[in-house]
Amino acid sequence: MGDHALPGTPPVPLTLRKSARARRISLRISQLDGRVTLTYPQGVPEAEALSFARTKEEWIRQHLLDRPDPAVVQFGQTIPIEGTERRIVPASGRRVLLQGDEVAVPEGAEARRLARFLKELARDRLTGACDDYAAMLGRSYSSLTMRDTRSRWGSCSSAGGLMFSWRLILAPPEILHYVAAHEVAHLVEMNHSADFWAQVERIFGDYRDQRRWLRDNGAQLHQYRFDASAS
Image (cartoon, rainbow, N blue to C red; front, top):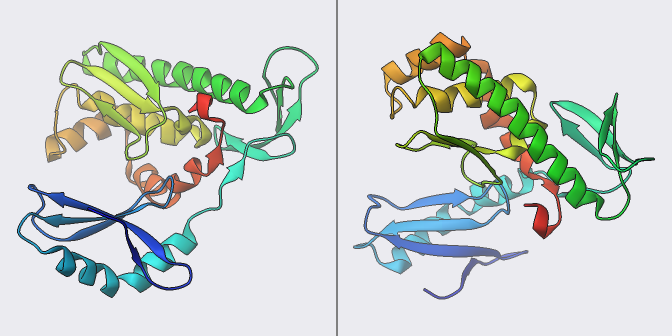
């Protein structure tokens, strides 16, 4: 569809997407990389969609300014692990170790090593939580996978496969447990009906604070940059 941008200093690149399913013009800003996507229905002229984007320029620029700055994962940097800020320090041995308010990482490809450790820690915590919640519902899941997803924290397939963002290990434990309960509840209700939320509350309890935390703070979990092979 060509390159488009909102003029100004700096110009804001726009990704245009025409959709047969769209019923109205909409804007979405990626929490991960700040990409601005303008989606519009088939019957709407491109010029009309761009005009809509221009009316939202102030909102777009403010949203981009509010995004957390990327944080390079390296020695001396701090990173939250299970909600606790830990300083990344060189390890004396060959293993990654949590030591109070520090995480010790062997030197050499430390970002990749730390990412691998975090993914395994996330798998361990999520497997334990999902096993417990599935047992409470009398259901079982078929698989559990870790990814570095942009748009969702977890999902449940119709075949019972669970998927989670491993970055949940950066959040406080109750946030990870809420997302685990949310996806396990889909084993009973593959929707977001009142019955579904009743299942979440049954196995987790009042989830509203955790849901609000993710909405308000989730973007911060994506600010930490690991090397390409760790994502």
